[in-house]
Length: 157
Image 1 (tube, rainbow, N blue to C red):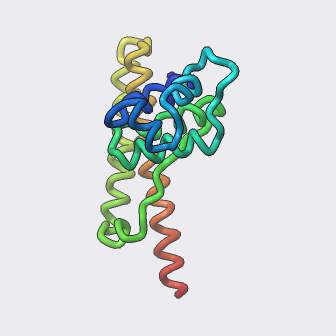
Image 2 (cartoon, helix red, strand yellow; image 1 turned 90 degrees about the vertical axis):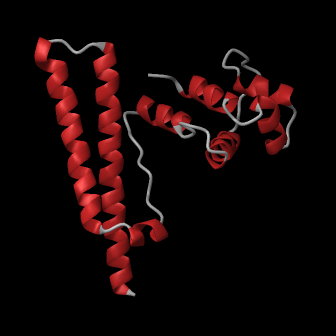
């Protein structure tokens, strides 16, 4: 699993226009940003706020896996994150669809684990796939929980 520093560097490099464009967006020099992103340079580290800004800029720019540094940080601490659905999206999405998605994603985890265990050993590639399936299932569960909370709060208004 990629550590949070490598993940941040990887995501930042994928920003449209690269590190130079991202640095301009953040209002700092490209050189300073490069130093902050290099895990080998101990004198420069991005602050919590800068990490958040980098992830936010990359997410807004449509960079694939923009949230990877956050996931890497949480994995280090034995935790997982999920995206909380926005109320507008939740209203368009039938609650029963959410439940079906949860069941489907949990089924995908079981299928990945089952096929990995067929030969009695779990390869690193299989473990990576299982990890991704677990992440999708946790996201779906988190979304379901958030949807139910939104429904409850809407009912109380």
